[in-house]
Each structure stands twice: as C-alpha cells, then as structure tokens.
Image (cartoon, rainbow, N blue to C red; front, side, top):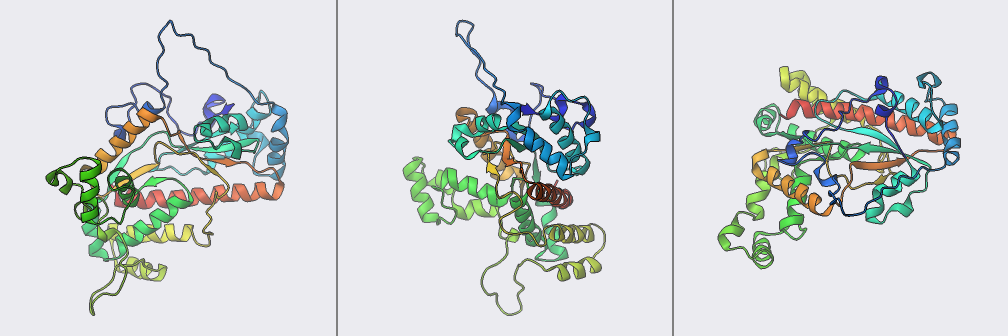
Length: 377
C-alpha cells in the first residue's frame, strides 16, 4: 500500500508534479524522466494480470496510535480519514509540509509505504527480509537536474584559496547525512567504475593497459580516458584539500574553521560574503552530529536519480556519464525511485527522537540548498 499526500487532499500536497509522458529530466537526455522505471508494453495476445495486496491495517494501527500520542502529529490535520493509514498519512504529510524548505537546487519528496510495499521496492536486490517495520517513510527522488560550478571557481578562489574546497567538503558531508547528491567526487567514482576497473587511484599506465585490453582501444583512443586527462576535468584539485606539506610561503588548501570563515565574511562584500555566511550556516547545521548519520537505521534503496548533480562543467564528461548511467538503468532496471526507506519507530521516546532527526535534516537541507544555489548555475 502506498500512501501519498496528493491522493488525499490538495491542501497537503508537498509540491510534486503530476506525472505526464512529456516530462523530461535534463540529465536523462531524450528519455522520459521515468524511463528506466517504465514497464515494457505487452502484446494483446499475451495474458497479463496485476495483483495489488493491502496489508492488514491491524498490523500498523498501534504504530499510528503511538505517533499521535507521542505529540508530533496533530489530529486537526486529519480530514475524514478512510482508515488508520489514511489518517496517519494526512497528519504525517502535514507535519512534513510545514517543515520542508523551499529548495532551488535540491529535488526530493516523501512517500509512506507499508511493509509489503517497502519489500516490493527492494526485493530485486534481495533485501526484503531486512524490512521488519510496519510502516516506512521513503525519501523519493523523482528526477535529476545538473548544475555547474565552473563560473564560481575563480571568484571563490579570489575570496580565499580554501573557500571552495571547504564548501565542497561540507556539501559532501551534508549529502551523507541527508540527500544523495552527485558531486564531482561521485562523478569520478562513476567514471572509475565504468572505465578504470573501479580503481579511482589508478595510474595512467595501468589505465591504458586496462582500456586497451578490456575495451580494445587504440593508444590514441585510450589517451582520452587516462586519469591525468579525466581527473582535472571532473574533479580538479581546487575542489579538494591538499595532503602533505607545502613549500615555505605557500598556503595549503584546507577546510577553514568557523572563526576563519567569519573573519573572511567580515572582510568580504556582496556575493563573496553571502557564500562565506552560507558555508558557516551549513557548518552550524551539522554541528554535533554523530558520524553514523541521522538515518543510520534506514534501508538504502538504490536510487536511479539524485536530488541534484553538481559538476564543474557539464560538457566535460558529465553528460556522457549520466547518459550511460540512465541507459544502463533502462536496460537493467536495477534502481528505484527512492533513496532510502526509513522505518517508523513504535516506542514513544524513539518516535520523538525520530521527528527531531527529521526536523534536523530539514535544517541541513535548507542550508545545503542555500549554498548550492549560490555557487552553482
């Protein structure tokens, strides 16, 4: 059973658009944004029968009651519910809608799935036996947009040589706590999986040997795929902190502290100051978080899309990598429309903590989106 706010009341719509076959995700090139999830058409003479199963409502009624009694969900948000699941969905989506930030870069939504629906999502990976909760809150990634950093690199370096690598470090950290974002680091990982036998640190000589042996490339063709050519295009050094010592008098790129960022903001004006303050805001939103993350008990769901793709230059490999990625998904279908499935808690204290973590996630997402909006186009 799938609960979605849009099926109950337009007043609690979380902003998702209705599906239409004409909708296109820019990263998906000429295919529709749901292309890799589309079922094949069947000829008229092929017998076909669909079966939809609904879990016994009694299995999650105690959970619904516990969430209302714990306090976060409000009875006044419920209008003429058809059953316990309906009431819970209305109240939950109303709670989410009040707290979801308005994002200009990140694209995501939520869905409520009962256990059987959640199991159906991940059974293609053999993970269904790991799902034991009655209800799951799924983070939905419906489509993917590509944004570029190239116009911001020089201006950010002019403000401070470590400002950009500080921003990218925090973006990666925030993504790990909240929404899946394809950053330059993720893109180089995609490239390594496809062309370098999964080895991101491969040398030019080893890469050339692999490309010629596995893909039957000529020396001339292989030269285009060598690490010394690809790495500076996809993930240039300016995005990363430097390891090791520098010569005397040379500054080393590193992650700046809050105090250093505040001093930099005080000394800057206009857009540069805004970026510094946005970095400080993102840093503050994650202060005190444990390394395990906000949703350490969630089931990863192998999303086909990301909440956003952020690259240096879309023309430098990004389009080709994403097109290959979506083509693979179209052929194999080994992906879902969800990032993760979060099991909803059943005990009062755990329920309160879960809503606190969700609220904290929204704070991080708001700060993350603000920074991405400032530094990407």
